[in-house]
Length: 294
Image 1 (cartoon, rainbow, N blue to C red):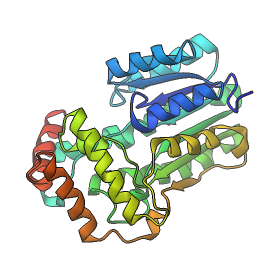
Image 2: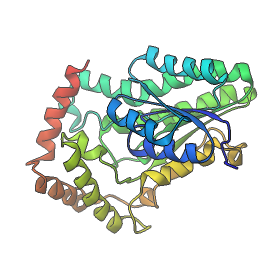
Image 3: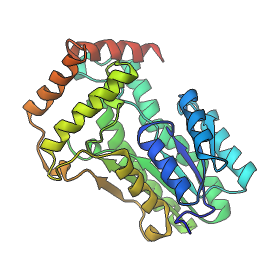
């Protein structure tokens, strides 16, 4: 018997990283999972691997219509929506504040924060009607303190944490719980992909970042996507049925440690070994590319 038996779940950004680990774990625990992403090849392969309880839908979270379509699909197919996990995200615009193009800021906020708002907005009417529901959103320790991530990413994550609190207060009377998870240093390819590395090199950089995290965190190992998936499982299950408006930090104690300049320099050294001459220069290029997405 699983902790999510017969629960209907939507997970955005489910084709890789934290989302993929969560899809796997939720399926193991008995849920029927609809997961969205824009990585169609990866998403379809994962759904095929996991069987009939895993359904992949192409979902660009910048488009409200695609988020709503996933929710409508869940209701049409299963008659309900028990868990909405707003997880999709990317590194976004970075660098000094004066170098961030306004359009790159807008795109980053659309993906990182506006998508969470849209997930809540469209899931809550369904949950109100059925008289229950659980909303989980991926935030970050970067939303709780400075020096952990770029400006816009950090601001978006802080906004998720506070929106979680205000919405939890509003919908609690409908038996809807709203929480966020704040990962710390998680060894995934997201950083390498954010600075433009191809998948193979991004995965290699994740391995190197894991080595660095092993050294700087109070708990001497890097965080893994599975660690966050387990936290999401607890929030989605009845084990946390009196928890709402909470920002659950899952970071091996990293939030209490000051990130030193040499830590950042070490990561840049790793990136240079993989063919990036300067992360700062690459971030300027990435900002320009993100701005063109507007």
